[in-house]
Amino acid sequence: MSFEAVSLEGRVAIVTGAGVGMGAATARLLAARGAKVVVSDINPETGEATTEQILSDGGEACFIKCDVADEGQVEALVARTVETFGKLDCAVNNAAITPDTLPIAEADMEVWDRVIAVDLRGVMLCMKYEIRQMLAQGNGGSVVNISSVSGVRPQPNNSAYVAAKHGVIGLTKAGSLENAPHNIRVNAVLPGAIDTPMLRAALEANNFTEAEFAPQLSLFSRFGKPEEVAEASAWLCSDASSYVTGHSMALEAGYLTR
Ligand SMILES: NC(=O)c1ccc[n+]([C@@H]2O[C@H](COP(=O)([O-])OP(=O)(O)OC[C@H]3O[C@@H](n4cnc5c(N)ncnc54)[C@H](O)[C@@H]3O)[C@@H](O)[C@H]2O)c1
Image (cartoon, rainbow, N blue to C red; front, side, top):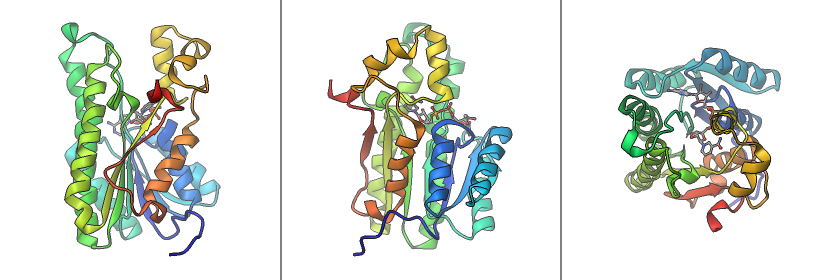
């Protein structure tokens, strides 16, 4: 056992939804720790921008466009990752959307289906092809699924998101059970209120300010920074977390303790 700082030197990682917010911060941190990073997003403009940023910081990265809800695109994402960087060691399944705002009795099922397609099926598809690749390599691996505090504590008028994020925790546990014999670890990260475009859109939709909202969601009365969550994903990707699997790690400034 060595006591070197958390390093991802020589590792190849995929981060989905890496154009903005937590995905972008995670991709940048993994690259800064030495990983070759596939920056993936449905939006090529922001995805390319994150990639440029990593390259100008001296890291290694490439952009691959992918809608995580589309099986063919997810399969191609993993195949192109291996073509580009030779293998896949770790993945952060981060992409998600939050357009549902109605109570269950008034739910728009088209919106519901799209949220489930991206936030739950998208994570399942990524796991399917990432784990398949890791199994073929035979050297273990680490998968990090981004759930949410909504995955354990629901909010009203958000049923698709809540169901998807609960489901991501279930998929994480199932993936950890199936793949522990192959040393492929599968963990979930549960962010609280983190200052990203997603949270800013929710504030605007509900007409809240940060000063009103943050004290309800954080014992520190502030929103988290994307980088504060990225640290957990980087740790879970690394060998420093070698005895951790099936775990749900909350980064929520004590929100769930109340
Ligand atoms: N911000 C928060 O407070 C918060 C809290 C809890 C959990 N989360 C979770 O953290 C993760 C990141 O959230 P964020 O706040 O950075 O979100 P964000 O909306 O700011 O960014 C999400 C990124 O995902 C991309 N994306 C959307 N649909 C996609 C698709 N179908 N395929 C590929 N990419 C797609 C977007 O283009 C965007 O770049 C999400 O899983 C989210 O549910 C966020």
